[in-house]
Structure formats: structure tokens, C-alpha cells
Image 1 (cartoon, rainbow, N blue to C red):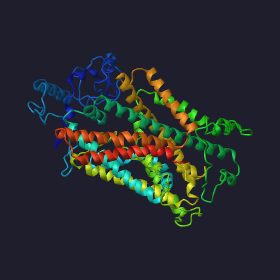
Image 2 (image 1 turned 180 degrees about the vertical axis):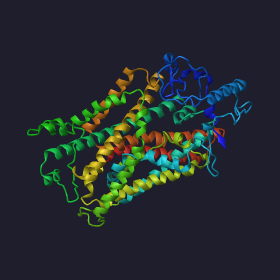
Image 3 (image 1 turned 30 degrees about the horizontal axis):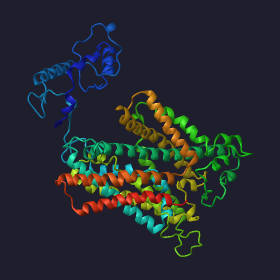
Image 4 (image 1 turned 90 degrees about the horizontal axis):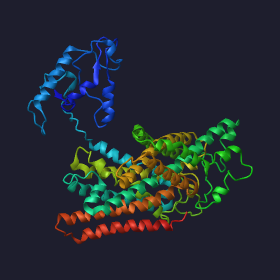
Length: 571
């Protein structure tokens, strides 16, 4: 039998927080007002203790509080608790693993024992390699899945698949460099995470650069989320409106012009970065219905979203939204199942030779940097790789586990991108940067996907906003919540930026590739390379062989060229 030592060492003085009323019908204990006041005045104190007992029972029922939620009174338990306090007093402050005067096993209540099962691993707060690999895979999976077929189409089939493999290799290597450097200095210098590592090796400038570009990556992700949430909300409400107002089922299923037999269509190109799209929209178009003027994707829906989410992102804590983290995994698997289901219905539509064919698939296109820019964000793990991997139970296997996770991520992107691209039954250049935009609003699987992803993203966006604000506010005010006015002002600025993107640049692919290329230049290509070189020199008395400079210099150059190339991609 093993026993949990940690749970039997609460402070004995907190027992006064609980009063028992043995004459109560329910026979339960409740916290007194004094105890609750003590908890409020000292928030760091644990509010729930596993084993405490009040030795003095109130004889007067009228003096006892109303009793709810406690354990029945038991003389044996009171005696056991008295012995526990006695051993605690004798033991005094313990240093390290000192076992002197530790409360004996026969005195410890049986509820603190658990059966020992041979072959099982004791709980240590660490996770297995399998869980670690899945955590890395799940962290990198996200909205990039919706844009991956478009990115492959921009690059060409051969160039697209090759770029995914190459970028996955580079991103894995630079992430592994961070782990190697952190393994040398993390525990020795008591460094918590990547910014602390930058502070230790590169000084204050390195820390500020890491925090700044981490915040920019979160800002880019927030803008992408806002565009997608506005899109999903608009189409969901429009579908319900059409369902209510349309009496003919035939008309309902042919709402979208250019709709095909597969409920697919090729959307008209959007004119962005100008007012033409806004001025030509239903809000200013003669003959538009009242509903279309009130509910339109070009202007009103992004603003409605801001009014809806502003109170949520101003909450002091975002703990509630972490309860929905599992929805992210479910959404990834749904998108994968969605693509596989549609591809099985369409069949393969590919032509490699006839350039006039609507199914012509080029092997290489000049727009291939669009894919490399997007992959810089889709394969981005570097700001949290330390936090994830240091929870691995087998630290010596970090390199292996990280490499397996990156291989799985690359295979997932390859599978989704290539499958949708090769089976798409319309012209390949019709593929949208949000693949759901290619489907009729009435398609059942698409409706489910939009509703589910809308709910999932609305629970993730407050977490993004919370992480962003904590990074910015702590950097400037040394506090994650200096005041409500600070938080409110920052959130208003964040939502203003997101709404501007949703109105004037509602292109998920463009936002992703530019933010990925910019933040990737610093976080994926530059900082890990510099940290590795500085660490190598520090470990070898200021010396490093030429290959160290050449290899990591080329990696930084790749990141710089990737950013520059985004400006020559044509829509």
C-alpha cells in the first residue's frame, strides 16, 4: 500500500474555519463567516483542506450556522485528527525528505490510502511520451487546415508537398535548438520559459523582441479568428433566415449562384484594401432587403461580433473558457472527416498535361511563397515548446517525441491539402482560402461545421485575448491586471483592429501568410538560431566552428527571403 503524503500535511490552524453541528438533521459542516473572510483576505490560502476537524462542538444549536455539505460527526475521526496535530507539533518544519516523526501509517485515515497495482507508474505530475506527442500535434493544428488546400493550389502540387516537408524539417530543427539550449540553462538558472531564456543569453533586448513578436503572432491569430467567426456567424444566421422565409425546398437548395451538383460553387473574387467592396455591398445597394442591410458580412456582422465578445474578453480570468479546450481537438477531427467524406463523393479530378482543362494541376507556381508564409504560422510552436516538453516524463526522449509530432503534423497538412486539391471537381483556382466558402450555404455537413467551429472559436478567442493582454500589460505595468480601464482600453483596441481586418481584408490566407512570415522570421528562424550559436560559444570558451555560423546563418536568410517573397505573391 502506498499513501499520498502531500495531502496529509495541511496547516492545522485552518480547522477553525469549519464548525460542526451534530444536532442538525443533515449533520454536515459549513464554513463560518470568519473562515470565509479569512479566505477572501488571503487568496493564496487553499480554500479546501482534505482533512480537518473541529474539536469543540457547539452545544447550542442556535449558535451554529446552517449546515450544508459536510461529513457526519465521528468521535474516532476527531481523535485521529487530534493525534495528527500532535505528530505535526512534534515534527516541526521538515527539510527535504526528512522522515523524522512523520505521522505513522496506522494513524493516517484510510481515505488517504490507494491500492498499489504492480506494473503501474506512480503519479508524478508528468505526462507520457504519447500524450506529449499528441499535445504538440494538437497545439499546431488549427485554422490553417481550412486554408491548406488553397495554399497547395497557390504553390502547385509538387512544390506544395515539398514545401510542407522542408518547412516542417526547418521548424522542427529550430524548435529542437530551443529545447537543447533550455536543457543546458533552464534548471541551472531557474528559467521558466522561452522569454527568460532570451533574457539570460541575449539580454533585455532579446526578451523584449521575444515578447513583442509573440504578441504580434497572437494579434495575427486573433484577426484570422475574427474573419472566420464573422463568416461562420453570417452564413449560419443567413441559413436559418432562408430556412424560415423560403417555402420552396428547391429554391432553398439553389440560393447560391453558380451552384453545382455537389453543392459547390466558385465565389466571385473580393476587392479588398479599398472601399469598393463595402460601397457595392447590400448596405448601400438599391433594392437590397432590410435584412440584408442589417445583416451583411461586409460591415455589420463583424461589429455585432465585437459587441457580443467585448464583455467576455474583459473578464479578469479566462479559466472558464479553458473547459472547452477539448473542442479544438474535436474540430480538427471533424474537418479531417469532412474533407475525406467530400473527397470520396467527388472522386479524383486531375489533369497534368492539358493546360486548358479545368482540372489542370501545375507542379510549380510562382505563388509558392504563399504556402511557405502560411506554414511559418501553421508549424509555429516555438513560444510554448518549452512549456509542453518539460512536462514530458521522459526528458531524454524529447527530441524523438518532438520529431514524431512534427512528422504527424506534416502528414496531416499533406493529407488535407493534397486530398482536397486533387479531388475538387471545379476549376482548381476556385479553391478558397477558407474551404467552407466553396460550399453552398444549405450543405448539411457545411452547416454543422460552421455552427460547431463558430462555438469553438468563440471559446478560444477570449483565451487569445487574455494571453495577449497579459503579455502586453505585464511588460509595461508589471501586472497582468493593473486596472479595469487598462484592460478595457486594450481590448477595445484589439477588437478595433480585428473588425478593420474583417471589413477591409477578409482574406484568411493573406493575413496568415503575412503574420506567419513576419513572426516566423523572428521566432522560428532568427531567435532559435542566435540562441544556439550564443550557447555554443558560451559552452566552448567563445569559439564555434564555421559550420555553426553557416548553417544557422542560412536558416535566418531563409526566413528573411520568406518575408520578402510575400510581397510578390499575386492574388
